[in-house]
Length: 386
Ligand code: PLP
Image (tube, rainbow, N blue to C red; front, side):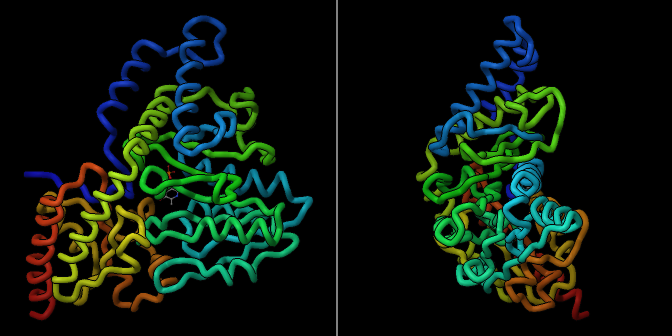
C-alpha cells in the first residue's frame, strides 16, 4: 500500500543527504571534539561547519548558537536558564496559553520556584493580541516567551511586532521565541525581530531526532542547566552529538536554501487542500488558511464525529498518516489548549485532525487524502446514525 505521510509537524523523514553525512561521520569521523588529536579536530570541525551553516540561515554569529538534545531542552535552557540568571531584575514572566508543553512546563517549574507567570489568551485564529502583551509587560518582567508558529493549527504569531513592543516597553526583558515549527518553513531573523533567544529542532526539518539548538544573542546571560565538563563554553556540558549536530546543520542549510520557492509551493498545496476540504460537507478548517498562516499545517474539525482517533485510524487503514491533537502530546489525549483558546465549539475538541505537509508532499497525495476523507466520513456518519 502507498504511504502518505501528512504528520510532518510531529516529525519528518531524514533527508537522504543528511543520512549520508551522518553515516559517514559515525563510521569515519567518530572522534570526541574535546580530544586533542586529529580525530578530535575532525569532529570539532564538523561542529563548526554546522554552526556556520545555521548561522548563515539566521543571519547571526556562529558563537551565538548552542546545540542541545532537542527543541524541548533548548526551550528549557532559554526559559529556566534565562529566568534563573536574571531573577535579580524581577520574577515576572509572560507566555501565551497555547505554547508547546516544553514551554508551559518550564514556566510551571519556575512558578514552583516563586516566579509569577502571565498567560496571554489568543483570538479565534490562535494568535496573541499585541494589546494583551503590552498590558502584561511590567518593570519586573524578565522574560517573555512566544511561539512563532503554533504546532496544532499553524497560526503565525506577530513576532516582529511583539519584539518591538517588548523592547520599547522594557529593553531588559528577554524575548524568547520557540521557532520549532517555523524554522525552515518561514524566514526567521532573530536580529530583525529583536529576539534574544530562539529555539529550533532537527527532526522537524528533515534532520535527525535528538538534536536542536538555541540561538543566544551575544550578551544574554543564562544559567546552564547541565553542569559537567564545560563543553560549549560551559553553557551546555556533555560530549557533543557530532553526527546529529552535523546532520542538523546540513538539514538547516537544505531547508533554507530555496525557502521562497518551497514556501510558494507549499502555500499552493495548502490552498488546494483547503479548497478540497471546503468541498467536504461538515468539514471546517480552523484559523487562517492563507499566507497569514504557516505553509505546512492544516487543522480541520468535522461535524458528526465523536472521536477524531476513529477517523485517524480510518485514514491509517488507507496508508495516510495524520495527527489528532498536538504534535508531541498526541499519544496522551488531553483537551487541546489551542483549540479551546480559539473558542472552538466543544463538539469539535475531539473531532479535529491536523494534516501537516513537507517539501516532499505532492498534490496527488492531497487529492487522495481528500477523497479518502470524503468516503470515511460518509461511512462513519452513517454508522453513527444507525
Ligand atoms: N516546540 C514546538 C512548537 C514543537 O512543536 C515541538 C515538537 O513538536 C517542540 C517544541 C519540542 O521539540 P523536540 O521534539 O525536539 O523536543
